[in-house]
Length: 377
Image 1 (tube, rainbow, N blue to C red):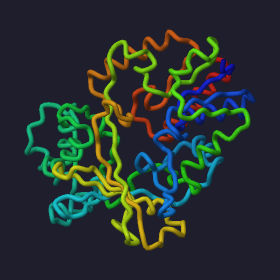
Image 2: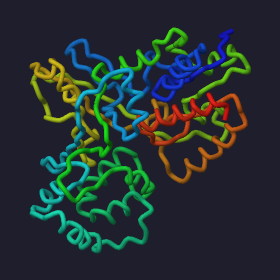
Image 3: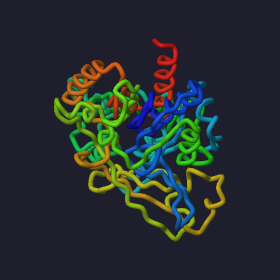
């Protein structure tokens, strides 16, 4: 019998935050159960032993937030460097700024628009398309930037990322991406931004280092569920459909595959992330990890580490992105309603809530969940 009053399933930011708070604030023992062989979930990073370069095992993760409480909390485990994220995109043999900004527009159309001229210019492009509504990702994107920019930078990339037509994807998926009519190249507009100087792997290790926290890796919660006390308070961040034995069917996910390669050059692409927007190119983007830590001595070395990222159907793969179409939303609502019938289980995180949470949103939610529990609400 694993006699724990508090049990956390999953060691990503949601689970790690709750476990750390229970141990540090409540001074209670807590068991963390992690199916993978490492802590940290999809945000985990580790050092490549061949190059000494730290890489993000599941794709580039940039921490950013405008929430002071979240920023103060996460900085208590590691200082952050001054990295500022920008994304570039290769299309038709040329490199463009992404998300779409004034530099992208001028380079694509070979014009020299001023910021105050952009709206009128794009309005003419938008009017060339008959848009019955803007509910889909495709129609919404065209309504913002016109069809030529959409087809060059959004359509093919979206097909690869989600595996379905952009006409069938809700507009909410693309609304989270900024669009600018000036030369602002920053991907995020958050007040604070950076990469933990010690790396994500180290930050999770410190979050879960409290003496009252016990971590079981390579352990499936469902294999040991019957060994836990019936009255244990469980914080679950795994897929919600698995928790309820898929009784209404399986939620759909997109997954990712990464192909790492060492390049014997000091700098391969000049930036941390390069998108490839054409549907004919099989991978979505290339990550070059050393750009995330320009403060480290390895940055100036004579080799670099890259990873090509491919998008996959989530069936039988590690889940990454929820597919928030009408079918899956109806399904997750059924699961979430039934989950409320288990008062000792709290569900959260991207997998648990089937929401496209960023890291800062995950931590903010976890802190709220903990504070609610602490005050007995």
